[in-house]
Image (cartoon, helix red, strand yellow):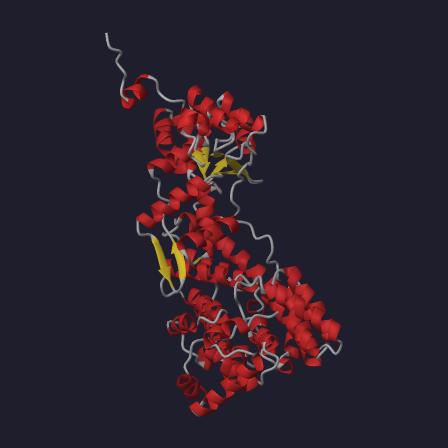
Amino acid sequence: MPRLTPSPRLAGLLCPPDPVEALDGVRVLVVDDAHLLDDSSAALVLRLALKGRTRLLVTVREGVPVPRDVSRLWEEGLLPRMTLALLGESECGELLSRAVGGYVDALTVRRLHRASRGDLRLLRELVVAVHAGGDLSHVSGTWTWRGVPPMTARARELVEETIRDVGGDEREVLELIASGRPLKLVTPGAGVTCGVLERLRARGLVTVNDRFSIRLVHPLHGPVLRAAAERRVASDPSGARRLLPTSATTLEAECEELAVRAYSGRLSGIPRGAGERMAEDDTGWDEPAMPEFCARRARVARLRGETRETIAWSREGLRRSPHHRACLAELAHASAYIGDLTTARQALSRGPAPRGDARTRMSGDARTGMGEDVRTGIGGYVRTRMWLATERARTWTLAAEGDLDGALRSALRAAGDDPLEDDMFALHDVARLGTPELVVDRLADLADRAEGDLAPLLAQHARALAGRDGEALDKVARGLADLGLALYAAEAFAHAALVHDDRRASQSSRNRAAALAGTCQGARSSALVNLALPKLTARQRQIVSLAAAGLTNRQIAEQLTVSIRTVANHLCDAYARLGSSDRADLGRLFTVG
């Protein structure tokens, strides 16, 4: 009987080849979620590692059981093990900028980081869902996202993983908190035991402050738990009374606190309160104080040199109240700092007109900031405060345009001539623009009446500028930096660098100015421009500033009332001194270094 020889295909089915041999040609093999492999698949991965001809990238989830053959990969040194930590906020921002190919505003980064808690998988899911829903918008070169975090099926699954093993009383408490946050313990130790809360706090699931106010740490635990919480409360009404909601917000108190901090100089360590949570969660639309909170928060960010964050907070307030004057003023002020004159001008055009008679007399306490939020006689006062904020924004917009004479006139208009109405920031603007002798005495008098460390420092800055005292300017700069006013400190160091007689001392001040300016998110002021472009005359710096802001030679000539040829000649001379002939690269030349 003839012997039958099976075909190669049939032979492969009857005697399958060794899987390791079948994968012999594979140079790189990625095994995702290897903790889910069955025993035979795990054994195959181990054999591939032992053979060493295939590069392996194996991922497992932390804190879950792993097949024995998978754990041997790192236990026996076959593969190096690397633990991927959660992303920090700055890392999240950098990753998002690379993903969308542009700048992502600070509030969007903070919201996505807080929603994902730094989990790369959840971050990716949220970004994809936000983009797919058309909620990621591109405005003035900045990517922004506002709205409720999208809860896709995959996002819900990833969030549920973090609380899957929470049960019993702890689960019930989480559901109650999710159904009515923020919540307050009525009596310490009553209803919900301190032991339950302590265990939840130790696991990083809730926070409990010194007033026994309780909140979920993860912002997405609320949506996941809420449905279950409603069923729990419906079936056990007595359980719903264990925790009672506090008042909806403390926005007015937070606005007052931000105003006091701004004028006293206590700008570091600002706690996250109801206003920031509402902005991040896109809630509080029925809170009339929310736009004002955004404006106050923007001002604090601007004083700290966080220019992009100032813009983000201003835009958030304008989303809620499109014509809020304080938000428009902060948007114009910060946009002028970074050279975005189009946005600055548009914001100013929506604010109050520059009228010298728009101001209304106020008490000295109010204008030093201590009474800024007093609501008695508010009609005239609010118009004054809004006018002052807008005029100061106009001052720095004019300075950014290179119109330093116009900027000084605007600053003097904001400073006024009545000591009872003095505002220390308006007075200090006059000094920052190069005429400190006009306000030295008034700032000194104001420093004697104001509370906090900031007013005396601003007065010392003006006096040191007027006296061209490099050592005193360095001392002031260090004090401003300690308070957290990075841009103001950078300017003071820049002033010191320009007046020091000793070259080494001048270079030291210059280096400190450069380091601080580098933290100010692209801000540049007159003092920093003077330090960055020391080889140019004042007129050349003015024309180069306008050219860097995007104006054509004709527009510059019209604005300065000179001929186009004069503008071109100044630019050519400036290019020669700076060693550059690229108009598009002018912005880089403003960097202090």
